[in-house]
Length: 133
Image (cartoon, rainbow, N blue to C red; front, side, top):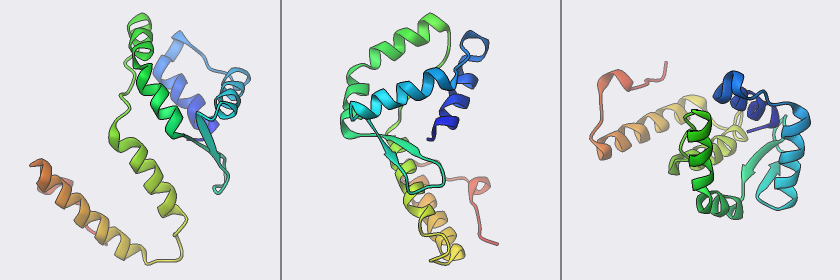
């Protein structure tokens, strides 16, 4: 996500318990980038930061820190799921193709893929199907 999204996410997660400011968040992002734990993607209108392989490894190794933070603050932190990074990377790649491929075809293929994945999980339901217009 980009820095402003991170500020909003932190504000939403912590509510009145913590008010993030650009003066604390952006230097933290810079430090993570200098340690090569995140990388900046300048291909978007806003700079988007993503965890590097090292960043993911360190985050996994220190998951207990997030657990302690969640217990101490009473905030339910979202689990870093396996799909989150894959979906973010996919969305980034797909956004670069906009205008170069047919959106209806993309929608049809994504709908088909979602249906196949739902079948694998055994959670397919008619109300969640998105059909192209």
